[in-house]
Length: 297
Image (cartoon, rainbow, N blue to C red; front, side, top):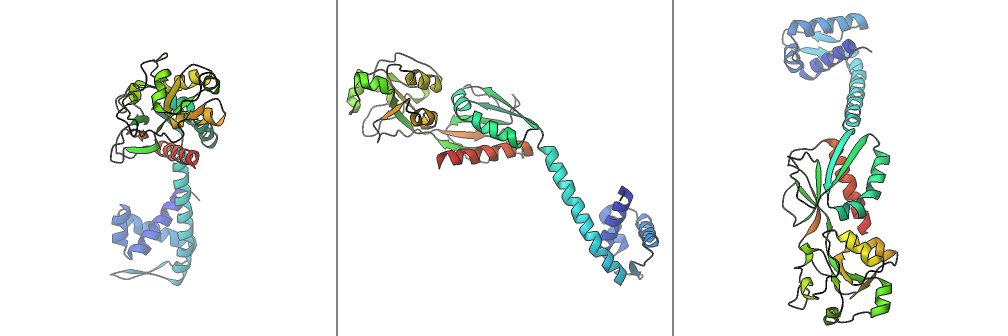
């Protein structure tokens, strides 16, 4: 079947649905003489009369009704094929993402590996950045941010961001497990600066008030996690999502099991604008959300 034949079927379908050659011509943006000529040619090829014509309307013949059953199926299949082809075409190209280094190194690698298996023709670029890139000016498709959620379609919450206290087993064996918050004055306390002012429940203190000893400082929480996990001295206050693997492996141990500090920030997925993003970007966003949900179950 060539393109001319497909066009004849579409014109035939338009006449059927409109019940009038003039209306069908307007619907398909075709001249009335052209649509009449092509329907007549189709009838000659099929060697049947498809329409009974009057001065006011046209009506399908019995042969026309039978033919329409087949044309509806053919055109439906063609539209499905066109839609699937268009969808596959949109699932190619590049996605540019900015994400904070701790999240990008701890959470994203396994998710991206799975995504690339399913969508090998989508290229993904991940740019580390704790600074706030302008997603539009810097041409990012998505931003992963640890931030206070904002209302609207641009922002989706991926993960809550509670803070817990951990230490290395070897450190606790050497210096003992603190049972009261007051005992933390005798220990080096590690935290990233943006979490310094998180309040301790039941007290008037913040994390930064617990100890004046910060033997190691960094703006990268994952670096502090690795420092502690490798036997570094001190007790670390850190986001749960950055600690899960280290706790599961036994490299770190949680202290104050009932202490869970509520941060007013979350791990959020941010779109550059409220406009509809490309399908490949939406597909990655949906994939990321689904994998994050599985991590929490």
